[in-house]
Image (cartoon, rainbow, N blue to C red; front, side, top):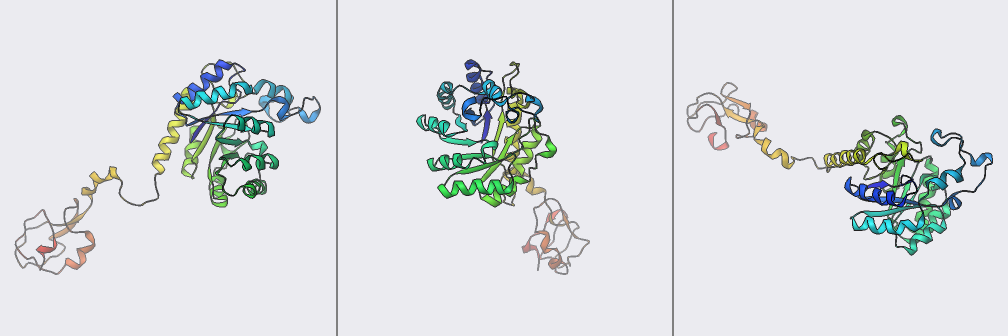
Length: 333
C-alpha cells in the first residue's frame, strides 16, 4: 500500500486539498491520508519555553499552537475528502491525535486509523483505537524498542486480533538517509509479527526501494502540488511528478522482490535451451567407446544432463553417431 500524506500542503485552501486527492490518484497512490487535529486538541496555546520549537530548523522559534493553527486540516473538509478519495478508488486513512478525533471518525466511517510517531507513547489513545477493532498503522519515529514493546502490548491487550502495521520512520524533516536505519524493518516484522514499511521523510527514491527489499509493504510520503506556495511541510514533500516516480520505484522494486521460490521464472523459459548437455562431437561407429575426445558438455540443452557424463565414459555406442548429435540413453550400450 502506498499512501499519499496530504498533511499541511493544502495551505488552508479547500480546493487545494481536493486537488491533492486528485493528484494522489493520478500519481498511482493506493490511499490518501489526512491528519485530524486542531491546534487546541494537539497542544496548548502558550509562548512559554516548552511550547516554543528550538531544534527543528524548519519551524525554529515558532510556538506549537501557531504552527498547528497554520498546518491543520479543517475537520469539516475531511468527510468530503474521504468521499472524493473513495470515488477515485483510493483508501482513506486519518491520523488521530486525541479522543475527540477518534470519536469524529467513528461518526464518519473511517476504515483505517493511523497513529503518528509522537503519539506512539499515548497509551490511552492506542487503547481507544484498538478497542474499535479496525486496522491500525503506527509510525515508530523517535521510539525505543521498549516504547514500541509497550505500544504493541497495549494494543494487543485490548484486541489481540488488531490488524497492525508498524512503519519505520525517522522524525526528522527532511530525514537524512544515513540515519534511517532501515534494517529495523526486519526487526519489526520478526519481533512483532506484523506488516511493516516506511513513513518516508527523505528526499531520495532509493530509501523506499531498499525498504522493499527488507520486507516493507506499506509506504507513506507527503505530497504537495506543483508550484504551490510554501507550507510547513513543503521541504520534505514531493510534487506530483516526483511522487509518481517514487511510486514507480516502489512498484518495480516490489515486483523484483517477488517470492522466495528458487526456480526458473516464466521470463527465463525461453533461455533454458541455452543450458548445457552432453553431445557427441566426433563421428562414432557402433561399439566404439565413449571418452573425453568424442563427447563433451556443451550448449545447448538438447542432450543428456551433464550429471551423467562420468557414468557414460567407458561405455559403448549402440549404433553409428554423427558429430553434433545430442546424446540420449538409447545410444549407449
